[in-house]
Length: 474
Image 1 (cartoon, helix red, strand yellow):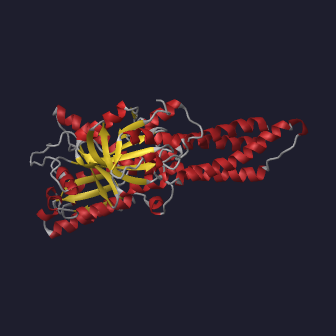
Image 2: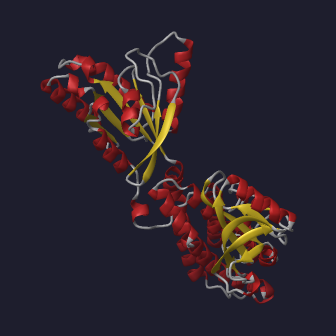
Image 3: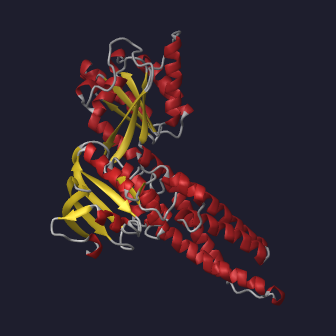
């Protein structure tokens, strides 16, 4: 792409609507718009103040295309840092295309994906991590992912990294200076202070790296696997959670043979529920494949919800023996996963049996802090709210509540891991008393990985990969 071109794109979703916004950016944006705009008060856009709005018509020769509002943003005080024009026109798909085609003929070119935000980055309006947060903000579909994206776009993560990089850079300069006086054997960098800084950097990096485990699932939706034997009410529970008939419900065991997934927001956090095939011994080839997928989904899940059919139990302790064995298998195979044991169809059993089952499943739950147990009636929605509360308890949202920086981007996570590796190497080198020139090499590498996050160090390939994931018009 040529960053000196004047670019144009639809900034609102494609299709018909009340209004549409067409964005133009570049050195000639205002002059090109001026030539096709007839103000109702005979204004010239070039002479107007920045951040002003003007009513008039977009014309193609003598032909009026639409009555519009034009917003003028003069560089460098604009989103991209360049001259920017935003045309608010009527939302007819025909009108949108007529206006865009007109400006393409008059010297604009179609913007590439993310090119407006890339120009904002290249012109110093955003650093790279803030630019990436723009895409996350657009994609956010719950309160938690929105909060994380806003915090990052406002520079919370960037400021932490920049501060660490600046402090490390100051010491790096002193280490490099020592190399110029190698024959005098002098030390300009106080090693005690440098060790304290390295420890501080390690602490911050470890906290940020650890936050990725929470941030990644919040960004993509926390996966919850709903498992159990056939016909215990897994699909009914999914429908109750989603408040819609998402999964087919039948009295025939083994109805669900493939996984069904959908997402809802609970307490501002996205949860992705996965309804799985019932676990049982079967000779049906298709059902066997579904059961295999069930265990794959349990592997991927953050929390496992295991359903029991209450009507299949009695007050005889032997009746729950097979359930205990099945739960032990799940717990032994996935010891780190939180587990919610649900006894379903409680409305179809006596109070005496309800109390017996409650005692038994709570007894199982007490063996592990990550295990909870409840009785519900999924069909009536009874107990669903209690289940939602339990799921929220299992999600570590402390950092989110405290407005701490949370990493959600895999590229940032990778750079932080590499930076920590280099910082550890510097610390080990100092403990072994290695020379300043070798220390300097490792410090430079750590600085390089910090710079990759904020964009002080970039390549065309990196920028291409990042901005290719943006929508056109942003």
